[in-house]
Length: 262
Image (cartoon, rainbow, N blue to C red; front, side, top):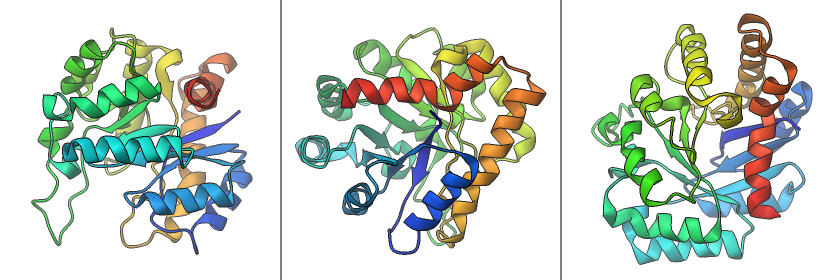
């Protein structure tokens, strides 16, 4: 099974059908989607449950309200994971004020996907997002304090690869290799270093589709672009064996999702 583990969705109307079409074109079986508006995620899941899995995407600094929101999304809406954006919501991942959300996620046995590394700069509000919150070293505390909680560092923490490597010995830390914002010239180096640090069992493929803020409808082309770039890199440039490629392109994600969905 091939799974795209990193797809943003802002609306359903003119986005969902092209997304599924492009998944079909390259043979992606399932996509993990998330939106800051959980109603959008829920609507998409209702329309295409056989092709989509949903993650809750919330602000954990809301305390008990955030915990209740997560419980609703998992228990009532059928979501199967949690996405967090430290740089968007201005919190350090190891700040104990957000620990209640980790405790709930660990109790629910769902994975938590963190944005790490470079972050989008909104020209209309350049001060809203800051890279300082998304450094992967902060996951060290979280992984140790919640050893049964699966943490996934989106984008492999790039460009903070040494920080990412520093926490690779913690068995509950994974990385996704979704790629955006930095030139593709850096992609090969990142993937090679993640393979050395994490091995093929803790690396997860994602396209980061849906991140182009002014053209969400056209951005579904990224499904095809990143699939081709990544499979070519793994198969032909790095030359991984078939079993390792299969794990990265869907096997590892499927294993984590099955722990949630049964």
